[in-house]
Length: 531
Ligand SMILES: [Zn+2]
Image (cartoon, rainbow, N blue to C red; front, side):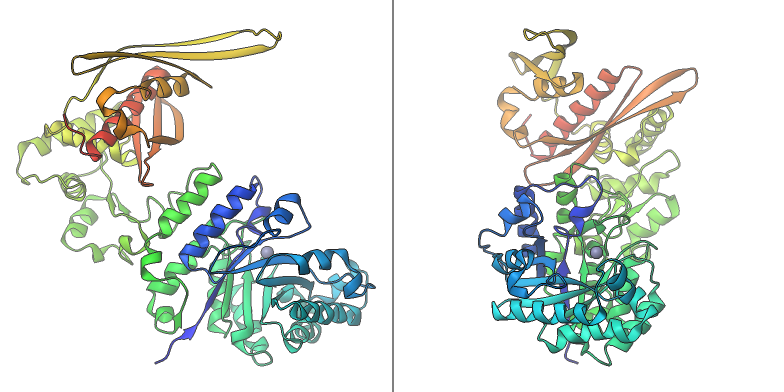
């Protein structure tokens, strides 16, 4: 059976830029557009030229992308001609392959928000599509509030869509702007629209206000729509847009969709999905959602003992898809409740060959239990667990020793009479017979200590040059009478691989130091640095 083409339209850089706390720079936008292009997304909506300086600059130059780079903006204002509307002129001048217009499709909004007549709104759609076509652009029309509009006045909502289609718009996109429509309603209404406009010219733009934006997108496809709009990691205002990071693997890996449709994302590109999702969070300087479907750190993690032993026999027993298809990893959590089978499974995953009757496995399990009782949490710190396992099995060289460190925090008035807090760390390290001393200033004690520690590791320096800290989390735990601090540090290397290490101590600097040391030693082990 010949598969139909289904198109993906990404609005991370436009609708996603409306997310509370998200503020893309021009460099961010260019980098993200490049990632989406490599992923195989058909349309990348870059922004709204004329609306702000960043977007105007973005559309001032040509782009060397395979994707259809799209500019977003409004149809001509009511009561003006298309040739006498500066907003429309900016949009038509934008260096873009396509223009996505947004127009009202709900008569109530036409009257209240636009303060014009239904007929003038249709004329504005007609004129704008015509003007963009005359400029040689591919044209899309986002029908704002389509579903609510259709429920109130189906004839008028359809007339808006049909007007754009008849004028030559490639796509008419049905938007659930307020995000309150439910999947069965979407399926029914899109089905009605597809009787009037061919489905291969109909798109869906769903918002996640009832946590069903992904389900609504698939409901629209079932009813005939052939373009899905969404954003990476479900970015978007309020509760976000449909999450393309969940939609893409479902389309590729679930037979209902993969047997019916081709999309622009190849199997090889799908393996980069987890990386793309994390790279976006990194740009936004926020921690990734561990429980994100397909790409989250916990998406393929198993804790209970019986599940772990079954997974070792056949992974398919507890996994709906294979983790490596989306660039993720299987993870068997090691915790206090865990049995020997978890430990064995995890050792196998990290490539440590041990006989299952080896007494050192029992010893390792004992150590894990003792340490978890005082606050360590190895299921959240995969790299620290691996080091602990390797140390118990005697395979971690003693690369270097920190013989002393000193962190000084001082608050004083500077030369300009401003109150400043200055932090400085000094670290003494012995590597073989060499003694090194490094000092660094930081924006806090942990930052200064990290910088000093990684400044000069002698012959090992080249292995840690690409190492950076991507997240630092602190929790105060109350165990018995005294409070202890648990520090989790997430690190990343030049290849984009990430790992988490842990430290626990009543002293936050000491806990941070343990986690920093584990991160560096883990990197040396991983890089195969010689002893
Ligand atoms: Zn939207």
